[in-house]
Image (cartoon, rainbow, N blue to C red; front, side, top):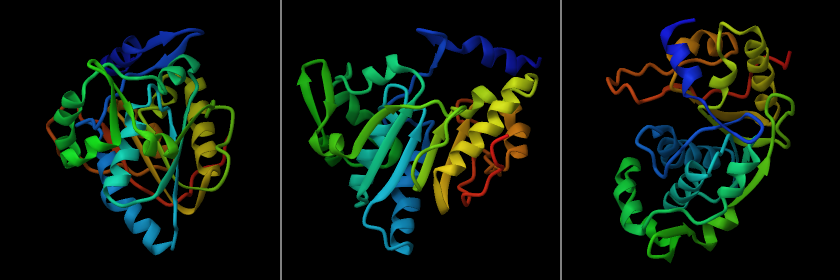
Length: 244
């Protein structure tokens, strides 16, 4: 097992019944695909497909911070969106709809990561001096739910699926079971996409690239020297191998 694969394995955090939990944050610098989706991909998609509402699924929402960030960015870029945020971990799903331990000033420091103005703060509200929560408009856009992407196809025909650092857990090339899960999860994601829908996948773990390539994804070349920046896979048409 390579050093990086071992580091990935050791860095996993478990809650409850050995369910994986990954931390995320609002308007993450290391999630530029969220900003790209809101500022460019979604507006172009709704215009060319004559859509009123951009239907999106966020697989692996964890505590929901990335999901709320994308919802806010959609509003700021004039995109009407409806997001289903899914995760296998019921513990973090429960936390995704609770107030977050930061202030509006804290949140303001993160907005430049996605090129957003302070007007975005109007979409959030202070609960007390130490906690904020998404405001009514954002809460009307997002629905949280449980889903195991290894076992269940995504329901519906969605315009977009986002899977940030989720499939990495099934892409360890040293583990035949995980390779099977990767093929299954890929097919289950594809099953929930409209023909021509868009897909955004990312992983922080470069050694897993070959497994993603085998599964039908094309990597976006990334010359960034930032070791914390994830390897992003291209927005591609909804064509992927069937679940094995």
